Amino acid sequence: MAKLLRFFENHMTQSGSQVHGLSSDASKWITAVSQNYAPSTLKRLLASQQCDVRQAAAWALSYLGDESHSNSLGLLLRDSARKVRTCADDARRAIALRTQSPWHRKTALHVEQLLADGMYSSATALATHLVDEADTRWDVYMLRAWVRFSDGDIEAAIVDCKKTLALDPFCYRACVALGQCLWHLGRDLAARECYCEAARIYPDWVPAKAALQMLTNE
Image 1: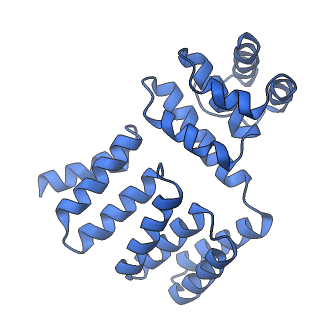
Image 2 (image 1 turned 90 degrees about the horizontal axis):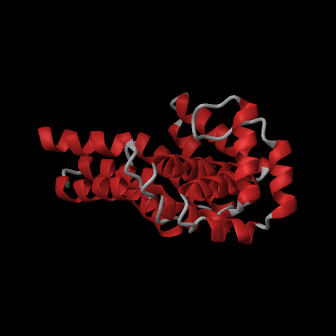
């Protein structure tokens, strides 16, 4: 654990970062971590009683972990230390992006561009193709839910939000998206439950708090 903390502290000092996020200039220290710690060991360290160790392990897994570590990191989204919560969130997003294939990444960007251009039918068709090719990944369903919601197909968007959560129960963004869908259908109580669940999973997620406040003020 001492080595891991030293690698992380050296990385933070060298990068000049004053926040507890991830730096793009980490290869030297990540190489050092990989020579001393297996991903399975880093996963165990996520449960350390020391918050600095939990934070450092989450940081290392953002570079060395894979999708099998997402749930363990998800548990840290409601850690008692904010710096750990932030690092766990960063790590989960980094893993999701890093494990996309080049085709997946290119296709997802194309879907987003079609959506931005208002080409909903084309965006839906391409997003569905992406789902068909990568149906074990939560992020493809989240992307299609966004497209379907934007196109006004709320019921279909709900299906995709639920599928996202079935694959990744810590996806607080899907909870908020599901809540928005339900709110548009006039199901305010169900929407509130979704927003509360998002806030429970990740207390720092501002959109969940804003959505709850909106319902309170109605």
